[in-house]
Length: 390
Ligand SMILES: [Zn+2]
Image 1 (cartoon, rainbow, N blue to C red):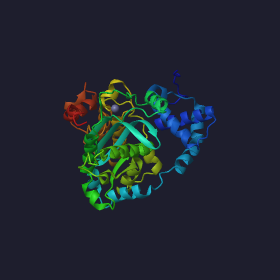
Image 2 (image 1 turned 90 degrees about the horizontal axis):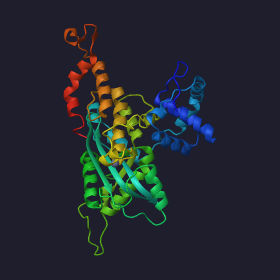
Image 3 (image 1 turned 180 degrees about the vertical axis):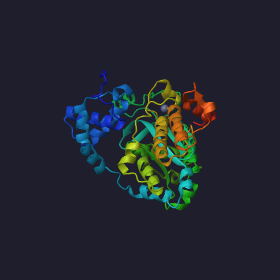
Image 4 (image 1 turned 90 degrees about the vertical axis):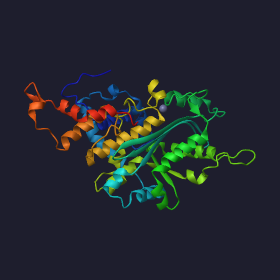
C-alpha cells in the first residue's frame, strides 16, 4: 500500500528510511534497538523489500521519531564500531603501508561472496563462489564464478538446507548441471586469481597469508567456504598419493577481512576523514540490490539477488561510490552498473570543470544547453564498451 505524498510526508533518504523501518519493527516486536541479532535480521528483511516498499512517504510525527531516536541508533553504531581484528587488521595495514595515492588506486583488491547449502558442525558446504578483482582506479578487472557440487544434504539438515535455499539463493540442491565437482580446477582458479595481485604483499607479510575482503556478515561463511575448498583441494586418495599436488595447504592461508575496514584504512591512508560507522554504512548501501547485469546468468534468469558473484560485484559498486564521491576520480563502466555509471560519469563531467562553453553547438532550441547531449557525446565510446569487461 502506498500513501499519497504531500508536503507533510517527506521522502526519506535510504538510510533514514531504514532507520524508520527499524524503529517501527522494534516497536511491533517489542525488540531493543541494541539487540545486534535483531538489527541483522532486520537488515536481511530490508534487503528483501522492493524499492517501492522501501520508498514510502512518511507522516511528520514518524519523521520526528526518526530524528529523536537517531541518537540511540548512532550510539548503537558507535558501540558496534569496527574493532581491531588483530592479525587480519595488521595484514591490511601492512598491505596499504607506505603506498602513495597512485599506488593505492592501482592496488588489486579481492572481493568475495558465496552461497552455501548448510552449516554442519562449523563446516560450511558451498554451492556458489564469486570473486572479483578490483582496483580503485579501474573498477572490476576480473571475476571468477563457479557453482560447486558439495554433495548430498547431510542427514538431518534437509529442512534447514531447503528453507535456506527457498528464502535466499534458490540454487538447486541436487542434480544441478551448472555445478562442478572439479575441485582442483576451482581451487586453481581461486588461488591463481587472488595470488596474482598479491605477489609483493606475500613477500612482505610474515605468514605469507593472502587476503580477500567480504561483507562483514559473510566473513565466517567465506572463511568456511575457503576452508572447505582447501580440504577438498589437498585431499589424498586411499593410496596416499596427493591428487592435487601442485599447490599446498600453505597456499590456502587466506584471511577474510571486513571490506568496510579496508575502506576505512584506505581513507586514512589518503588523509580523508571518514568514521568506521560511515564506512560501514557505505558498504551496506542497498541501492545496488536490483542493478541489472550484476548477478550470474542463472540468478539473473530467475531474478534472485542472492548470487555469489552478484554480491562480490555489489561490494565493488559500493566501494566505488564511497571512494568516487570523495576522491573525485574519473569513473569507468567497470566501476558501476550501467545506470549508476552514467550518473557518476555525468557528475564527474561537471565536477572536473570541463563544462563546454561553445553554446553554438550545444544549445537546445536556442534556450538551454543540452547537457545530456554533451555528456552522451563525451562518453559515447565508454558507454559502447560498457559491460565488456565484466
Ligand atoms: Zn549466481
